[in-house]
Image (cartoon, rainbow, N blue to C red; front, side, top):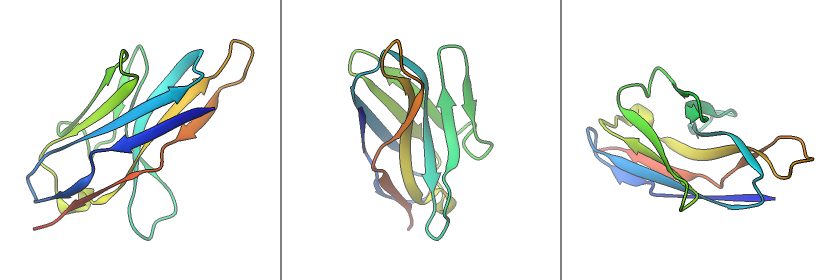
Length: 121
């Protein structure tokens, strides 16, 4: 089992910045992909913000140029640095890991509990 805990959300004015963190714990023999998704109020699905593995990083069009993902393997934490935030960025942001917990297991997807980002004046 893998546990993900997001933090860093809050209220920010348009044009402001936030950095979200996602701390991971549990058995992770191999981490295939890590990423950030968001879900706006009233929608049933979560949209990709950014995801990465060892060879590539992908950003949604809405995030490219404003958001940056990074990682600190020693702290088992990934980050989402967000700049130039706008009201349409208001959402609950979720961290997601796709992990092979042991050498014999399949790849499973894990979600954090989410952290709310509100962009408003």
